Image (cartoon, rainbow, N blue to C red; front, side):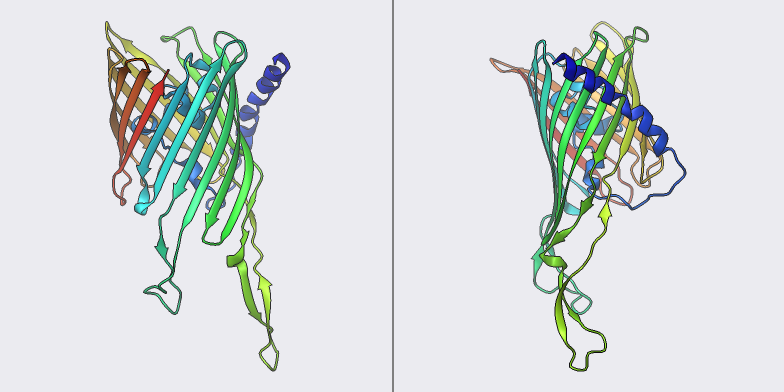
Length: 337
């Protein structure tokens, strides 16, 4: 186990190296698949402008920084759902459990579904009467460990699958993350994460099978053929962030978070969020996303409730502005035991 922790530590340094590669002046806009991996499914994170990286959402920390779950001392389960843009839906489930002397293990599932859509063609632009759907799935397994009392690292392995009608593609990838708790500014936490580093995705399936008319054939000969598709990268993301309690009173706390996101397929984005809490019971949150085309402000609240014989239950709500699209509402329920 000690050797495994050393390997994890070495891998955790990769985000710093890869960040330099992402900084090169090349435009890769529109060249990534599985873009549902960019969407924040957890209400607390969204309400704070997608700025937090160091935890605070229990098992859901695996979504934003695999090292974050190392800070937990209890088992945790998170369920989140939201109606996403244009009547699609995203559902997220995560669980984590610490094992003293070994580390913290986590699993999570992220699912995107389009619902049924009516097929249209050039000849039937009002619909053919046939329906199809699209879906995305991510299955992840995470290991995180505290290497010192201040420094934690995490590694997440994931399987990604996309399906569009009768065509599909799959890939394997991993996320690397680290957190460092400083000794100043109320123990400010610094975080770094590299996400979605892995294989490419190439679509195959029955929908790519066509009938091809041989050019120049006097009898209009037709032969079966398969359309050739390109391989596409996952959305490689590098995040760096800092968060701390800016102010602390008797039972009140004001928590601030800031993060910067660099991606291979869009401009650098910045996120700023705040959370006010009273007696660790009620939470008010707000945030702003900079550098996005449509997304801007977000807000929400949370409740931390004690459940007899079960531990704690957290309920979080968020609303986010998406410009020309409707407001997006998110709900998350979590348990710590």
